[in-house]
Image 1 (cartoon, rainbow over the protein chains, first blue to last red):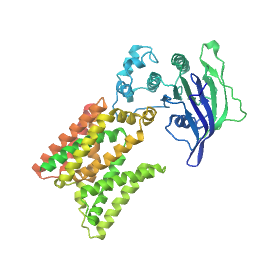
Image 2 (image 1 turned 90 degrees about the vertical axis):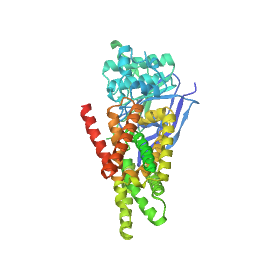
Image 3 (image 1 turned 135 degrees about the vertical axis):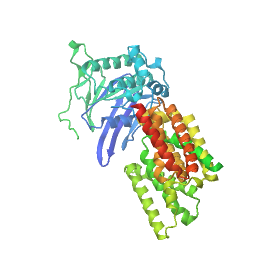
Image 4 (image 1 turned 90 degrees about the horizontal axis):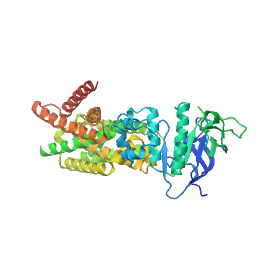
Length: 231
Length: 253
């Protein structure tokens, strides 16, 4: 099956430092992919190169023709200076209320509350939910989620993974999740890529929490060196 | 008088709109350093006999382009703007001293509303037209870029192009308005109407409308006060705006 995206020997240098060093991988259609690695490992940089927000120093990104991408950035916070209702923000992205209903907000009161709120007043959790709903509503081929579970408790993470799996099956899209959690990943992931500037290892997670009816899986690293954190 | 009224009317509209964009994209530093850098047009006028309005536009555009160029070279754009702006002020002061202090520095500092002429009216009305066209055709893109340039880029919007266009329009508008308002009060004239409008707005369109309304009303009230009491126009305008800002802050508490 032809991949949606292929990264070939991608490197990125910034002010003499190598942030990403010769990373190659493929994302196939209708798959869940997880990019794990410690803080400062270059995960978000890889995502931004893939999205076209940043350019690579060397290497190549091959994308399927007319590939449609959606993105949920890490720690998004709207500015006070621009007064934007969520409804206007969603409209500016070419969507309407019915497009985002039933994806993340199961309760119509909750959706109404978000719909009529100013974007800058939403809490981190609501912002994350809104951006996720928008990303799915745009019906992309590939969604990139940067640290989507960073501030969620275990129940919320389980629920989030449930939504991801539902939408993957419904829309037949691919998902790339970026996470600094090295071991706990979505249980149904097709590919886990461990990054620490370079690609350390890759593989599939195994289910560890079946008894808790959880979607969380454990990824066992197949490399013999430690992850270095860069402060 | 017709030129003064027309020029003030168009400049108020332009600054009312641009003030909102400056706030949304946190470009306050650009407005401030640009206003200071434009003083260098006095040197161009002295040596090359270029009209001040044209010289100001040239200086403003060169300033924006050069500071963007150095930001591309990974240095911080805010720092490069402060460096260029300070260097241009220093060069103007030195040149003024060398040629015997014949520059109208004071008029440039506090503005001279009587300096409005045909060129100012034509340029400010053209800028107003371009701004309205820009808002009409690119409003959604502008809002998205202001909310998040990353999300805008992923959604197919060329954020850099939008920001570049905003900077160029800002440069020309400030260059034209500076002769009326003066360097010292330019940033306040740009920021205060938009800041007051922000307090009472729930949408970007509403904010622009209120900002333009405040900017225009205050300009004409200040013009009347300035003529009636024979005092400086820009000082009257800034005091009126500052009072409105204080009242607005109290009302929103």
